[in-house]
Length: 291
Ligand code: NAP
Image (cartoon, rainbow, N blue to C red; front, side, top):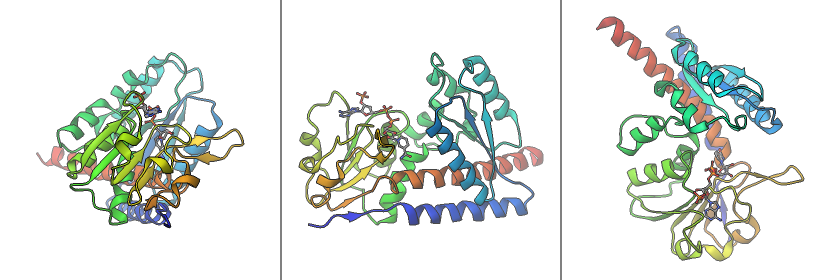
């Protein structure tokens, strides 16, 4: 059985092009979209990732403001910066990049991201709105999984989907998006017991646990589609997912690679969300001035 590799690269380019087109239209209306990324760490891989967002934004015609507060920024400083960015009309989208300094309460801080600019769905209000079907930005990674399934014409409605991981940034919002698409969802976590009990009969398995090699060929059926959200850096610096790719290849019907799968689509979606936020904010401004 040969496993089809579902590369995210072409889809990422298509989404980036869409963001570029949107940014150009906005600029015609006198608005250049702006994404602000708040960073408070010395971690090299985080800075590398933030620079990659900056480059992608600039090539899509979106300005990117990196607010680097250093590794010893306090929670008060971070909260105040987030509030200022929320009030700044030149900023359309805000990302609070993790990791944050020790002692800083991420759960508290994300509540200071303006919901209208919360383009990575980090504020609990965004997750709440998603849960009740109100307009909001889903975390880009969760939406990336849906976009990949759509792009490869993989149906979701009425299918048995297992999501491994229940974090507020990936597993939970993804489960809500899949539920919205009429999938039958099972969410697994560190205490749900042996994975194969759930995954063996799944049509689609999404792994987002951050555990190298968590899902192997023995866990999945021959017609399963496996989406690997995990990103784990090995001691030699290479990036791998949560799937033991060598053993799943040849068993499952399809698999997303790491790198080159979910991650590449996620970055493009951050840009598209920024243009969507900018468009909505400019409409709200027009409604405000005309009303
Ligand atoms: P997280 O907050 O650490 O959550 C991990 C989840 O996995 C938790 O719900 C945990 O269960 C579950 N889990 C851990 N070990 C497990 C096991 N042995 N069996 C079953 N479930 C297990 O991580 P996250 O922020 O959601 O990120 C998950 C992964 O996705 C990470 O590798 C991260 O780097 C990656 N990621 C990738 C992108 C991208 O763009 N590609 C974006 C975001 C995150 P409990 O709740 O019981 O602890």
